[in-house]
Length: 377
Image 1 (cartoon, rainbow, N blue to C red):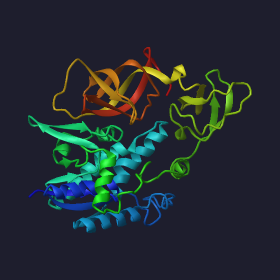
Image 2 (cartoon, one colour):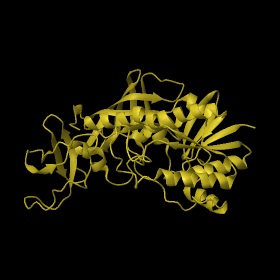
Image 3 (cartoon, rainbow, N blue to C red):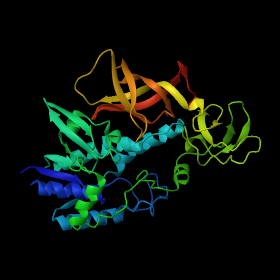
Image 4 (cartoon, one colour):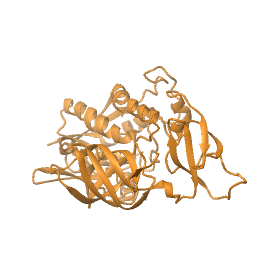
């Protein structure tokens, strides 16, 4: 009988993952990950953890424990606080210093959930690990493939694009073939306390609120001008790190009588002059691009292509796939040419590549172009 260690988070998805593995005859144990030190109300630098009441890890642990007891499985608990700080949070801060918009969830999967977690699971005698992600794994001809989850509205392969063959070979996604409503139904039928629990959103250590306040704990705010492309000053921004390309809300520049009431959007940043550029209209021309350079590419497939390859890509989570042509610049950098103009492709975010249901891998968007001219994002 194979032993599987499930990442039991206190949510419904991981709860049902454990339930299904038990029903399939595996020896199952749970492992709760603690990635942020909210229990002592401070971080590794001694700064107050403003998120303590927003991201209740202890409540999640208690829910995970209730689920484990209900299923009759052992629940381990392990601190990954230092690993999270070193491998995820420092990168998160560095990207914001550059004025970019990072995606820490992808690094959390790469370094914490499928690396540090896997190492602890191996020490516990695991043959496999399992997570409650909406994704699938298939092994064929001595190669392991990462496939989209059947529920397209919940598919999480975008966040798993940095996983390797070795990690995927040891990983199960027991709910990847289900839709969310089916997962909740199974949890309800099994009497699991998480059956109706609200899905968590936002970055775990920040939660759903107070992002600006949290970030100011680590990075000094540098207010500056909000300008049109013509150089007209419309207002003041709080700091470039708080804004992302294509953003509409939170600009504080509505009601200017010199312009019509068409909404304003962030269309660019100048880190040298500390200027935030805005333009009117959700389809402002400066928001569109036709090419980008993607760095630090993780290519999951064992087959590395030469020349160019026609596939699809996502530049944001839940974005509709975009047809693209990719070609290698060097061993981990891709030139990505879009077959149609794409809105708000943002440096720091992930570009994730697909061929049908197969997730081929992904990397970090570095530079964005339109008609071979660099966008000032």
